[in-house]
Length: 107
View 1: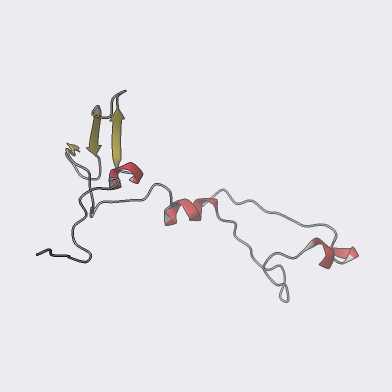
View 2: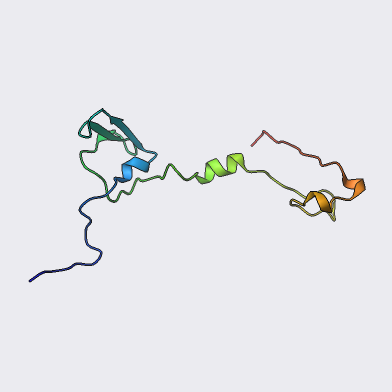
């Protein structure tokens, strides 16, 4: 008799720590030479196993909201009838051949 459990606990797979911002990973030359430390909480602690699920996980391949706001451009309309946004070069009128770009470093 065999039992099959759907969506059961996985027995192997990559650790979440490999892609976590809060992980400090030290690897040696052998596969067994690896130390993983979690910096999400104080005190920093060693993680002795591959992690499947974690409440302190932050994906380092995705930018945080603060990081996205830091690099975002603020596009504001000029004048009462101005529209904010980008237009293609072909739609520029001859009198609008110049584009003004204002960088605000105060934020």
